[in-house]
Every structure is written in C-alpha cells, then in structure tokens.
Length: 574
Image 1 (cartoon, helix red, strand yellow):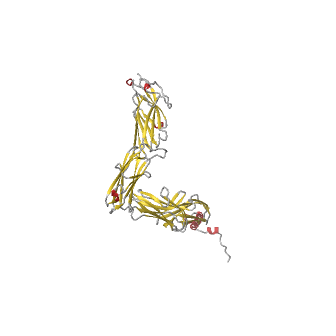
Image 2: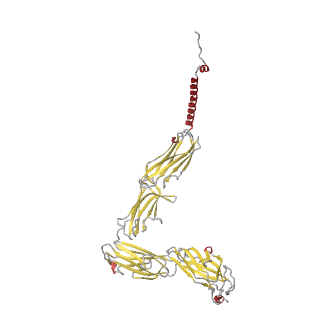
Image 3: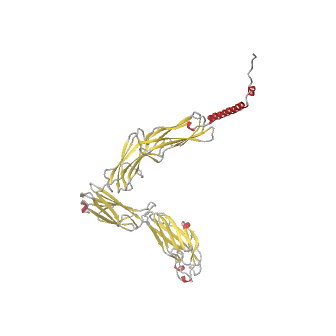
C-alpha cells in the first residue's frame, strides 16, 4: 500500500469543525493572557519592596544602675532587593541621660547596599529612680531606589534601673528639737569600680531650716562639690542646723555629677521632718507684734518670753539676745541685762535674774529691752539699702538649748518737692512780672522725687491746676514722657513708676519740668495767686510692702525757690 504523509497544521485545521476551531482560538487567548499575567507578577516580584526585610534593632543590657555607663548597639541590615538611598538614623534618648561623647541624635548613613548594613555603638548612663523603666528609641529612614517614597523603621529598648552607681543618705537624730542646734549627717558612696569625676551633692532643706555650720564648705545654694570619687569610696558630711517648725517638708539630698554647669542627679534620698517637743521654749515680739516694720527715729520694745517644758528643774539657765543691724541707735538702749558693746549682745543669767539660777518645771518668764531706730538713714554706698534690725535670742543650759529670732524691716522715706520759677534756664518764661489782672504770665514748675533706703514702685504724683491757670503742654526732664494732663478735670498725673533706693541721696532727684500760664482774675489783685494745687505722691515700698505717701504744698506766685522774684514781684497787680 502506498505510504500516506502527515498533514501540515493549516491542512489539519481545515479538517476541524467550526466548533473545534472556536475552542482552539479561545484556548490560545487564555494561554497568552496567563503568560502576560505571569510576566507581570514576576516583574512586580523583582521590583517590589518589603519594609519588613530591613532588620533594625537595639541590643544591650536589660537593667543597669542609675548613672552607670552601659553599651548599646543599634544594628541595621538591608535584606531587600533594592539599594536604600538617603538613609539616616535618628536616636531618641531618655530625659536626663548622659551620653559619652555627647548627644548625636541624627546620623547620616548615606546609601545602604543590597545585603549591606552597619552598627552604631552608644555608651549611655541612664538616670532614674530605682525600679523605673527607661526607654532608648531609634528610627531608621530611607528611600528605596525604585520609589520616590520615604520609609521609616522604628525600634526601642526598655531598660530597668536597678540601684545607683552613686548613693546618698540623709541621717538625722532620733529627736529633733525645734529652735535648737541639731547634728545631721549626709552619707555618700561610689558603688562601682569606676572613678566618677565632678561629683556633687545638692540639698533641699525645709523652709524653716537654717544651716548653721558644715565640716565641708558648701556653695551658697546648699551644694557640696566632692570632685573625683574613686571606686567603692564612701564618706560623709556633718552639718548642724536649726529647725524652727515642721510643716510637712522633707530633708532632700541628691548626688550626681556636674557637666557644663548642669547637675545630673543619679540618686535622691528624702527624710520626712519630725520634731520633738522642746524642753525650752522661746518667743520674741516687738511692740507686742510678731512682725513689724519701723521708721527712722521709732522706739522699739522687744519682749522675749521663755518657758521650761522639760518636766524637771533646769539650773544655770543663760538667755542671750544678739542685736544686728546698721540702724540700731545703741546709745538709747535700756535693759536689765548685761550689754556687751563689742558684739552687741545682751545677757541674762542668775546674776541679774534670780529665777534663771533654778528654772522650775513649767515655769516661765519674760525679759525686755528698748532701743531706738537711728533718726537718719546710714547711706554711704548703693549697697546701703533694705535695712533690717535683727534680734537672735538663745536660751541654754548644760542639757538643752533653744533659739528664736525676729527681724524688723525699716521703711523707706520718699519726699516730693514742688519748685516754681519765672527765671529758669530749662524753659523761657514770658508775661508781666509781677503778674497783672487779665494778662498771661508763664511759669516753670519742677516736680522732684527723692527716695531713701528701699526701692519704690507704682509711684504716682497728682495735682490740679487752679483757677486761671492753663496747661501749655510743654514738658521736659527724665519723667517728661509719663506726665499727662486731663483738660476735663484739670488734673496733672505723673506716672513715675519705679524709683530706686538712693534717688536724690546718692543720685540726683527724679524730676519732671513743665510750663503753665497764669491769667489772674480781678478778685486776685494785690494777692499771691496759686499756680499749682497741693501735690500728692503715692506708691509702695518694695522691701517692706507698706504704702508710701508724701505731699508738697500749694505753689503760689511768691516762688520761694526763685531768688529773682521775691515778695515785690509776687502780688497780682490790678
């Protein structure tokens, strides 16, 4: 039989039925669609970016002592299929943390290649209370090469504070007697094998506590600079002080280091205030008041009340009062005690008060003395201001003691002077002299303020223009800008404001100059006519808090401060 050859594809298709041809065409379209989708998926897989493939973490100790250095490593690795451009690391440190080398919060990493990465090592000392949690945070920002978007990965490390590298403790006696000297101890220690530099202790004492002495000199804000503290070294500071009363305050002490004039507190210790009943009690009053202010020349009467609350008789009791202040007039002192003019101390004992030889349990008494305030302020330099008169009283026996003090603030004195001139270099005047009825004559007026020992504030001067006197709106002098005239009421108001102590004493008076015009009426003929009403000054003493007041009399055409006028040129002519 003859051999038959296989048909070609076009020949074969000619033998397919129409239905078979439709199926074949549909299958081809489906195949091409699947192929296109598969290619797109493959391309998207090649170019897509997965943020989760960027590894970012912080490794280091989970707990550390407050103030002790710890090393933490921030790692970043690019496990994606794209280069990470414009990469940057931002580190957020806990408040108060000390970073070796300074706080470098933003670090530029540039580009991170595929499979690339790096580590950033940080040495940090966390500062916080025991058992507190501190958090070190970081963020990694970058831009994948195939996108314009910026991504950011974040990570954090929580660190528990366990104890402190430096510790401090405040110790007080079991019984703290009010108004008596008590001994306190501030203990400190370096708990590590490392040297700490610039170590300091800061104390916050109760409001009614007075530091009397310290075996190590503190700074003015109750701080002690210890310097370098070697490994495992401990020490103590012994202080003495007087606590007058307890009002819910604490003795607070903190230890840390000082860097760039800033105190970094590692550890703090607080001791509640608890007072015992004092076996001796003192109370001081001045002019029968617990608090008082005084003026130069005033008479002051001080009373010191004392009482034995110990439950037993106390022998050989000595009571002393030390007087301090520049404004005491010691020549006027009257007292039944012994006065020592070298140290300004009055002493009462069994020699001048028999009861003090054996003060029975529950017994009380009083001593008194009187003294004047100097009649004039003692002002030689600008430091001579805010004068205080102090009395510090102390009662003591071999077994107990108590102390009390009182201070009297001296009020300032403010003076106001009104001076008038026709012949004045500050402003030229015109018009008839002596003045004439129905004719205008101008005058220059000077207001001068003097203030002595304390700064004054809210100072104002007021006056009114009398009948026939007109305001010319001409003013000069240091206070000219704050002088105003109310044409509806005829009132002059000078808002002086603050006046420093020593103005008019160590400095020139504070002054304003202004000009007015007088047109006398017929009924003023042959009289000296007023050109400015009575002037009144008000204000507040910034040291004592008391009100200030001063006045100056009516100014008339006789002008006592102008030697060129006199009585013959002062009376109004018809």
